[in-house]
Length: 488
Image (tube, rainbow, N blue to C red):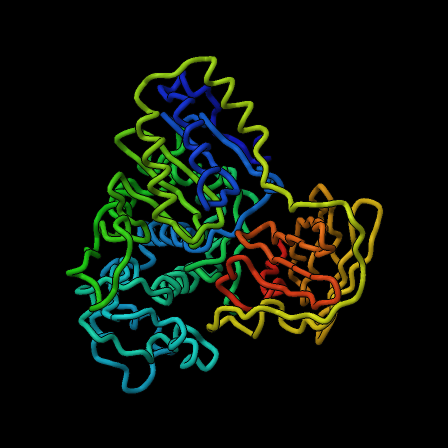
């Protein structure tokens, strides 16, 4: 199955020097691991040689890719710089004088666009929470109120408001949003027509929040592998791609704040919103969203996933896929891999076949506190009513400001929607399934299908309905907070 915007050529693995048996071994390793993949796409010599989606995820569904969003903001910055709208050595404060507070720390006088793009603002820790607390309605104004501890350009610190500021700069100097600017220059030529982005006010988040299809990520990876060319068109300046995907800031132990520690592939250096790998470079987003580029192999690997061990996932991909690009391979292995990829599916909950229904008080798990949190995994949820239907159940969740009914499949995934909280936003799609244990307990998986996240519901006979995210979204305002601006 391919996405509706497919334009990348397809090829058998062996025709591009890829041993399909190596990809098959990767799938074995993934099955034996704790990593939950939602999609995988492998490109060699510009051709898709392996692609698969673990049902209920599918090629035509978008996926929240968290900090992979930064690669799109980086592209917008590169285009704007090439058009002379601003420069790498511009001072950020000069573009936002109206937001700079009185008594701003003098180190901001030396804080340049290049520092914002390379995560070297001089701060020793992430500033997002502090900037939000000081924002008075504008996150960038709040950022300027947080003094850097070090001189800009001397220290690596992963820091969301830095690239948010670059996104704001793109918007301010182009007269529209980041997507407005990218569509005619990049997205439309790439055939990326589905992109939606979470907003902060009337500007895209820039550091996170974009939702795109797997193939759109693959096109983006192929674009930077080919130095900004896609087909016959030079969509990104070649010099910009070279800068963005090469070392701009050291981020090993000697160039980080005291006490900061990360896995090995997070200490190989940082470009302009790209990480250096031990092999090649990558863009990445929380919970295993990857665009990995291996120039020596002329290859791109893309994943969407829900995993907390991102280094472990990188290790598996590298261990199995790099050797697979040795020039070996057979048509028999190609066919076996294609059949396996076509049948990928996540396991369904166990089901002993019993009946289940009732109304239950809700116990909601805690969420991650932060600037986008509003309390509990599903804010306002108080009561859950479970009613049987022909192919499963209807689950109605009610409470303060909450009244949502989702179909829950039995032995299958049922499609439903969480209503948008206000006009101008799209409903949040779900795919849900459940089963009944031998002891009468009911276990449901409610997958917020355009994100990495799954809401688990567990009810024991006579008990309460326990709601908790398997791994919590990085914004804590529940499903309603993931409603996206409607595309015209």
